[in-house]
Amino acid sequence: MSRTMTDTLTVYLNEIGKHPLLTKEDEIRLSNQIREGQEASKQMEASDYRDLDELQKLERRVKRSDRAKEKFILGNLRLVVSVAKKYPVAGSLELEDLIQEGNVGLEHAVQKFDGRKGFKFSTYGTFWIRQAINRLIDQHSNLIRIPADTHSALRRQLREADSTSPDLSSEMNRIHALTQVTSLDGPVITDEDKNLHSVIASPDRSPDDFVQDWHETETIHKALKRLPSKTQAMLKYRFGFDDGIERTFREIGDLLDVSAESARRTVAKAISQLAAEPALID
Image 1 (cartoon, rainbow, N blue to C red):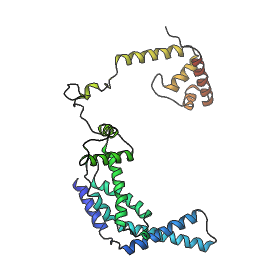
Image 2 (image 1 turned 180 degrees about the vertical axis):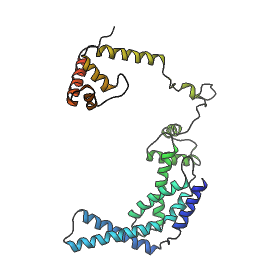
Image 3 (image 1 turned 120 degrees about the vertical axis):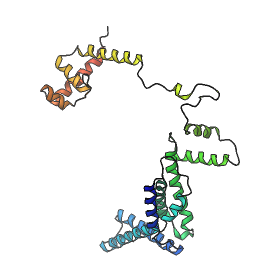
Image 4 (image 1 turned 135 degrees about the vertical axis):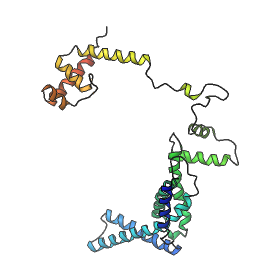
């Protein structure tokens, strides 16, 4: 981690440390206010109120809910940092990335938490924080993207393989192999000389590609010669046959002193005509 990022994290930790931790009573009270605000918001969206006074009461509940949610989140930001620090940081991710994503999970947990059920928020919130962080790591850990639930199942089997079972299931073994970074110099098959680099298609154009391009170009020119010169020009401008620039019908009209609609109709008619008649190929 760079010094700049370390300094940024230090400032962040100092800021969140200024917010007091919540007691169990605080959690119950704030969760009740958040829930009341959510219900009031639904009533407002459904226009489920009798008069202006009742609407104003609903608006006050929503505002109080927003303040309660903010206080709840601020009081648990240190929980996110505590959870995020337990993850190894690798690849393109930084600890700040894990904390930021963990905060998203925290916000979701605060919205869903019901203090009346007697659970302490730290246990409930940790689940959602971990889920958010795991999702972020899954998205950045592999070159091949796989569904989150599949990645979770793979991660679970990898953990179990360390202690109870030496092997993964056939499906998970295949997915695990596909998501691993492999050197191009590595052998395709163990104890053989052929490596991955030798079987990857070359990005260079082959002689066959050049022949195919030449053949297509010749076919297009022969087909265009069967059309009036002005129509030829419209098609060349439209599809960029000469300079690679594809022009709009308005641009074609300006170049050939016709309306855009006339150019469009002429091009469409020419394409239909060429499609209906076989191209001249010597």
